[in-house]
Image 1 (spheres, rainbow, N blue to C red):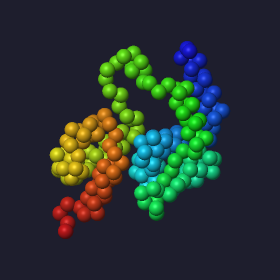
Image 2 (cartoon, helix red, strand yellow):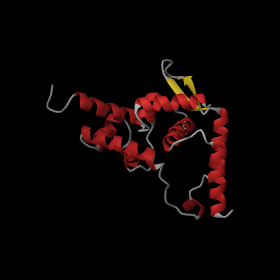
Image 3 (cartoon, rainbow, N blue to C red):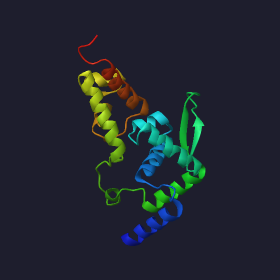
Length: 189
C-alpha cells in the first residue's frame, strides 16, 4: 500500500472508531493504560499522574469521561484491594489492536534489517529517565541508587539511557526518594 493510502486509511479508522479520543492527552492516557496493562502492571490514578499525563484533577476528569464512553474500565487492584486500577474495555482493546495493526507494529528501521535497538516510547522514557536521574543525584550517584534499589548497575544504566523502561516498583521507589528529599532538605534535621 502506498504511504499516502495507508495514512488515509489510518485517518479514516481514527475518525470512525477513535473519535472518543478527543485530544493528544486522551491518546496518552489510553496508551499508558494499554501499555502497562500489557506489561501485566495496570495503573492506578496516582501512577497515571506520576507519568506526567496531567494534573490530578485533569486526569480524574479525563478518566471519568473515558469510562463513561466505554474506553476504559475501573477494577479493584488484585494486590491492594483499596486501590483502583484502570484497564482498556474489551471492545476498545480490540479496536486498539486493529489500530496498531493498521499502523504497523514494526519500526521502519526494523523492516530494513537495521540492528540498532528501538528505544521505548519517547514520552514515557523521558519521564522515567528524568525521575531516575534525579533520584541518583539526590542519593549521590548511580552506584548508590542501584544499591538502594537492589538492582544491577547494568540494568540501571539501561534505564538511565532510556533504552528500557524500569519496572513500576523501581520508578515509584525513585519518586519516593525524591519526595523524601523534598520533605527533608539538606542541612535540616
